Amino acid sequence: MPDYSKIHDLVSHRVSLEYDTGARVVGMLASCQPSSGPVEFVVLHDAKLFSSSGKLVRELADVTLCPNVVTGLSLDEGPRGRDVK
Image 1 (tube, rainbow, N blue to C red):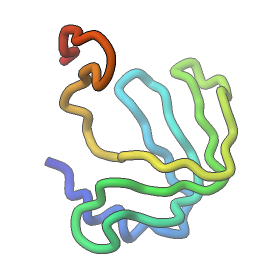
Image 2: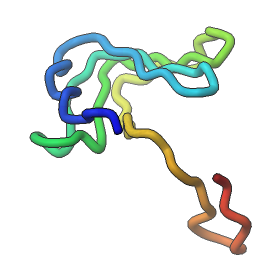
Image 3: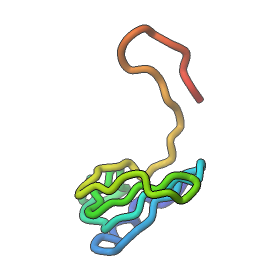
Image 4: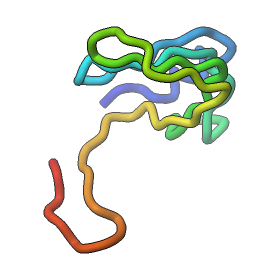
C-alpha cells in the first residue's frame, strides 16, 4: 500500500495525479485532509484535467480529489445495479 502520508510533503508544489487510464490532473497542491497522517483528499489550485490522449479537457480554479487507489465503484442512488470492480 502506498504511503499516503508523504503527500503532505508536496503541499505548495505543482503535482500530477496519474490514473490507470492515462488520464491525469495537474495542479498546485493547496492542502490535504486530514492535516496529518495518511491523506484521504487533496485540494488542487489552478487544476488542469487531461484525457488519456493528452488533450486538455477542463481547467478549474480549485478541485478536491481523492489521490488513493479506487477499489470499487457502485451505484449510490436510483435502481440498484451491479457493482463494478
